[in-house]
Image 1: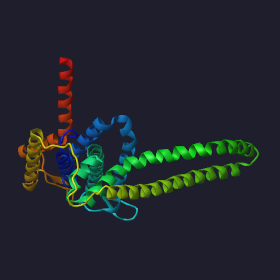
Image 2: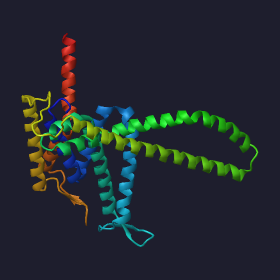
Image 3: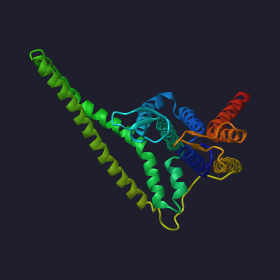
Image 4: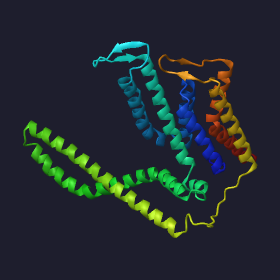
Length: 315
């Protein structure tokens, strides 16, 4: 969606995020999660994806475990917990659905952060909602900037402490050879505490830098007249015929899916008993439209890449 007008990109991510959060049908959740994963893989590559997937996987496990631990609704009793509460099949299934929904939303937000750059956010909201546009652009850009800055802070502090640590390591090695076993455990714990302290110090430096960067950005935008009435801005974005076609396709897909949800074509209940729309003809058609909507960026990018390769081979 990067080559389309910012309005088209914003509408698309608004649609997929809304559908991922509100449509809890297992098939819809699976389509959204798998599509978001492959689109993020297409944008970032596996090298950049695998670090974030560990955190998303951990959040999925926490969400899947927390729901049956605190929610005891449902009619299918599987076991009784030590607290006396029941463990139901419905609470487990809802926990798994919530975990998939959370992972899909996080992946879509990551893709949105890649496509919807700061200049696009300012272009969309800067004229009518200048404060909102500035805040959103700062939020969208803060996460990658904070990740890069944290690496810089950690690297700088490690280089500063490298010589000190090497000198202390020789002394500690001599001392550890002459102390008892219980004292060795003490030094291990002390090293862990020092590691945690260094991490807290790095985080404190990062927060201070983030606040200063936010103030500097706000002052810079204010000095340029951002938000003043009558101020114009140069932009290269043009709403072309291709954008109109994509807008029509997205609105048709969204209207069909919303109509299907109103007619209970993709309805699904987890409590008190799990069940809902299955594989009827109308429901299957909604699944296919939803799948096509989620895969639209991959289809468009694949078509553009194939077209570009064809032009290159012709040359």
